Length: 246
Length: 215
Image (cartoon, rainbow over all chains, first blue to last red; front, side):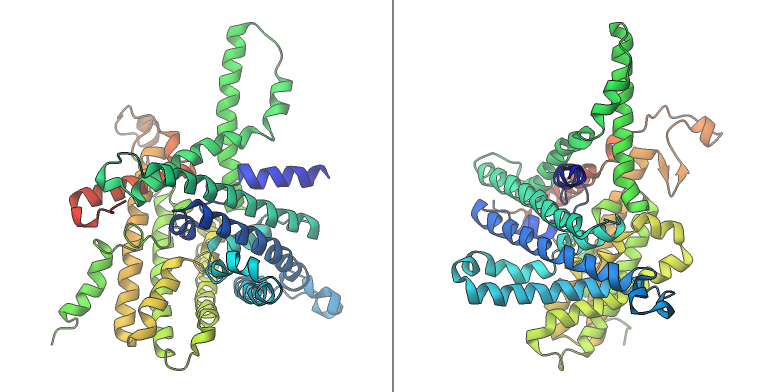
């Protein structure tokens, strides 16, 4: 249970799709002019991630990983099909998106009206493929965790696009320097929001470190705290980089 | 006749500046920015995209008359995915360390919006040679931004270029000189990439007021 909660908050805040790894930036920038459309796209992303990540987890576990084909018989134990993962993942995503679109259109026309137009856009959204690829890279262990990961990274993306859409609606009334208007200021605001989200980095590790430090006089404490802060920043770098490196 | 007519030259040169895929068309930011903390990774990423977009445009352009328009997205995705797998396997074979650094971001070239965008907007309606030039041009425009961002982030953030020390504490590192520059850790964190691109857009648009958006 604890690992579920940890993964949930980690995917939403610390490894936020937009602010930590820049996934889905194209639609994030293109569809964030109004809050209403941003909510629609965000909901569609949560939905599709929740479907495709567990599905790709199953594919990875029983088809692609080194030795995954062993369930067919011991003679297949040596096969490693992981080089096929890109093409299989993207094919799954494209078909799932089409399928979801057809099913939603058939059974819930009202949902289709609000989500439907975004679904084709989503097949080529990097956040979706990124979700599956990071799921593979982080070696998520169970199907439940994979589902959790899909949903929570979707929520993280939803939060990000909602926030930027709200800001962009307001910024229309501000006097932004002409060359920065539109795209430029959106980039810079996203960068600033990303810096804000960086501070969530200590959320899951910070508590333990603080408990271990012995209580000294105030100056020593201050130095300790500064050291910790530096360490935390370094650790965040690592936690972000080791995903890339490992 | 020259190898490239004037029109063809424009296909390559336009995306480098006034029709840049990243700063003007707002495409392909997705997989780009996360890897620009190092110049080397940026250059390799740019080369990978040039390869995939150049060849992909040719393939799609050759098949443009036989692809049914209803399933064209899936066909395009399969073509890109195949090319990206080639890139990934080549990187793993010849530059293993680098492929570790780039990791999933090589895979994310598949959903790079520039690629799908160029397939849709150009390769489906033009011949192979022009599509090839268009692909190379757009990928170069993308690469230029990546390299600029990578250059500033690595130089100011780590005080190195391609891993060779330039700033920092150079007496220890280079044995030659000291600039007294302290590495700016801010440039290494992911949000710095966005701000650097924002500044590039600012500079470009103040030099060319035609590009300024209304709102």
